[in-house]
Length: 115
Image (cartoon, rainbow, N blue to C red; front, side):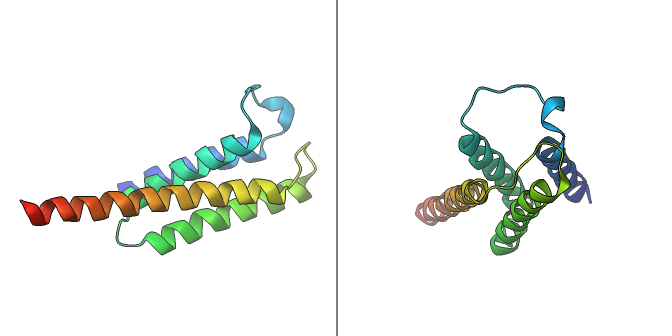
């Protein structure tokens, strides 16, 4: 139950930052696409740590969340704009986290077999 609460809070924090009016957010001097990729990689990695046996579900959920954010940004009119390139950056972050976790798990299994 704690996993759901922590992951839910992380999702809520991401949604707040992504959907708050632009003037309500602090200015960050990082490339927007990098911000998206890192945010979605972190969210996906958290989900994969909590549910390692469900990588496709975690990746699918976080990617769907990214798509929902872009749709909401395009339709809510609070100074935000939906952007397909942002969704691609989200997808890159999801893929990077999934690949990193897959490599970690394979490497860990390989070390266990040697011991």
